[in-house]
Length: 532
Image (cartoon, rainbow, N blue to C red; front, side, top):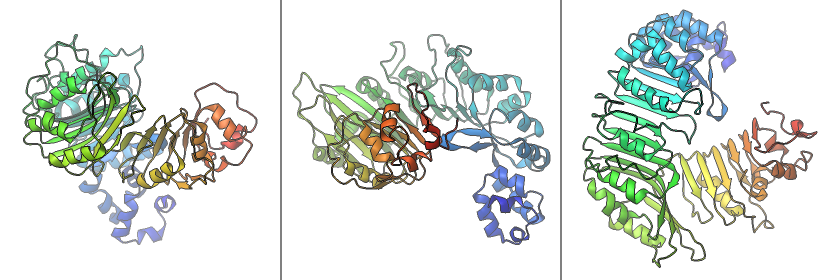
């Protein structure tokens, strides 16, 4: 298709009806379409240089593993020199990356630009462009109402961590018309930290911001953003790395009447749900939409269920219209004898409180120290599903792209068959289980994961690597990344000489082995596509 597009002399494509041309254009990036087709003839120009098509331009390329790359110099030169001067007054939104940003913003004036996305920027480079680039500074000060920032670097000694919140504060100060801001990190586990004890009440202030999506490190940072300095904020979508006890100096009692939509995600376990999260939610008396993704540890207590959600939280939100959640409770009842809810009890509680479209599964095993319950909305609204265990009953999860399996009991063969059917669009799978399979002598069900790209088995028993890598067990047509222990890989491949795993391993473009090793003789022939 690309060959056909790039050949301007090809009479076949010139004769295609508009409907077919639009179908071809929909399969290509807009930058490729602009580069290849603008100027070919009047028909193409009418289709492409249309405000509804070219109002949003993305000057990045998406690679494997969600990596980002710049567009090539030849394409950039043609776009900036020949095409942008014809469409600059029609562009409302730009997505840029570090290597091409200077050329893009000095090519033309973007008189209608109101939305800007900085993707794959280090914080130091981002700060330099914001402060030193006069064009960007003017746009952010006068025009930008929607800003998306995706930071890709880790904290370094050359850029102190306290400067991260200074960037956030600077953006709010500069962007006088900003109403929608996304400030996120590329890597899970990294977030923005506000050094509250160093910041004044006039820091990070905005009277215009209504919607904020942000990754932060602590619960203190969340409370800091809700202390009134963002006076028009009605939507907060926040990912908190770890939820600990808060500072005694931060108020977690004042009502938040302007907040209409709140989404809280935290991938780490927290023991401070009852003491910190519940009081925060009770402050949101006018909330209309609530989303929670949490993993909660409770001591000497019961599971979080529908009765708890209603009586402790939802009753304080009379205007709530939409509720989505995935909440895992891990109980450690050591000193108290507590009768725990069964799965039927959990389901009855939701029905009793008129909370419908909910599923759950419970693990009440007296022989174990930890008991567990997972409750979640149906259809499941998140793209991640964490800590699936061997008691998983099965259900459809069409939105899930990333699954983590974790247990001390074995994952048997039939469970993987269920997962392949229930998570049909899975792209990432991580298995944390050191228990050997008990039913290996039974015939293994052949499993197919049509979209699985990344497999993590570095903290798993060798049985699970064998389950996925041996061609007789699994078909993984898209597998391109593997994280595994060297010993496991060497055993499975008989020191990279047998053919059992060769077909699946030959597709790999990334192999992560954390311990040092010397490449044996046949290593590179076993992994011909590895990016060295």
